[in-house]
Image 1 (cartoon, helix red, strand yellow):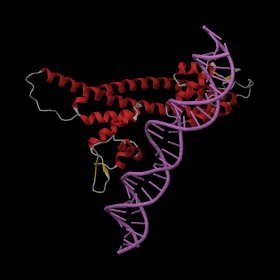
Image 2 (cartoon, each protein chain N blue to C red):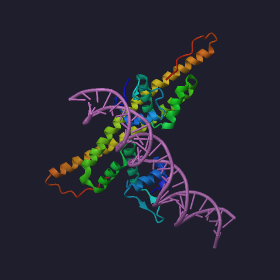
Image 3 (cartoon, rainbow over the protein chains, first blue to last red):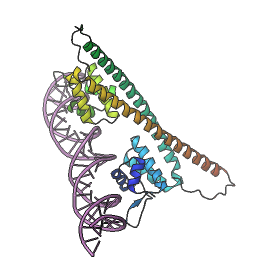
Image 4 (spheres, rainbow over the protein chains, first blue to last red):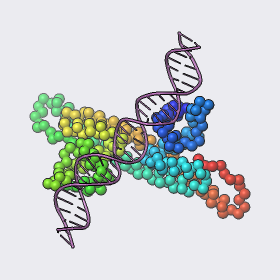
Length: 138
Length: 138
DNA sequence: TGACTCTTGAGAGCTACTCTCAGTCAATAC
DNA sequence: GTATTGACTGAGAGTAGCTCTCAAGAGTCA
C-alpha cells in the first residue's frame, strides 16, 4: 500500500492532481487508513496508469469518468469499454503521426540554424569577408 | 494571401485560436486589407506552422512569444533560438517515448477485451456452459 | 433596400489543473 | 508534557489556454 506521495513519485503525477482525480471519482476503490489517509493498493496503481494514459491522449475528464463507471458496472459494459479503448488507440496513433511531422519540422529548423551558425563563424574567422549583411532569418 | 478562415482550414487550427495567437503577438507581420481584415501571407503560414509545432509539444505561450521576439530581433539571437529548437526537439522525443508506452498499454487492453468478448460469445453459444460467473474485469 | 455572410474586438465561460491555506494528527526533540 | 516538525486533509482561489457569444461593420446578391 502506498501513500499519495509515494504514488506521485512512482507514477510521475503531482499529489494535487492525484487528489483532484480522486475527487473526480477516478479511483473508486481507494481505502483510507485509521487517520483518513488515502492508501493506494497495487490495483489502484493500475487505475492511475489507465487514467494517466487516457489523459495523455487528450480524453477529457468527463469521458474518463464514463469509462471508470462502466468498469464498476461489470461485464455487461465490456463492448462499450472495448470501443473506448479502440477509439483511444486511434487517437494515440494520430498523435504519433502528428508528432512525427513536428519532429521533421524541428529537424529542419535545427539544421537551418546549424548552417547559419557555421556560416557566421566562418565569416568572423575570415579577415577577407566582405559579404553584405544577410537577410533576416525567420 | 489567405483570410483567417482559409488559414484555419488549411492548418487545422480554429479561427478563435488564430485570433488568440495573433493577439498574443505570435504573428507580428500580418497585414490587414482595406476593411481591417487579416490577410495571411505564405510566410505567415510558416509562423502558424511553427507556433502550432511549439504548442503541440507543450511549449507555453510565454516561451513561444520569447521565440517570436528573438526571431524579430535578427541574427544576433540565432544561438538562443537554436537552443530553443534543440530543447523542443528533446521534449518531442520524450513525448514520443511516452506515447509509445501508452500505445502498448492500449494494445494490451484491446487484446484483454477481445479475449473477454470472445469467451463470452463462446459461452453464450454453448448450451452446456455451466461455468460460474467470472470475476469483474478492471 | 434589405437579407445574408463574413469579419472584427471585447469579454464571459470553460477545463483541468495548480496552488495556498488553515487545520488535523502522529512522531520526535527538549 | 509541551513544542516543533512533517505528512496529510478539504475548501477554495488562481491560472493557462483556449472556446464561445455577441454586437457592430462592411461586402454581396436579389
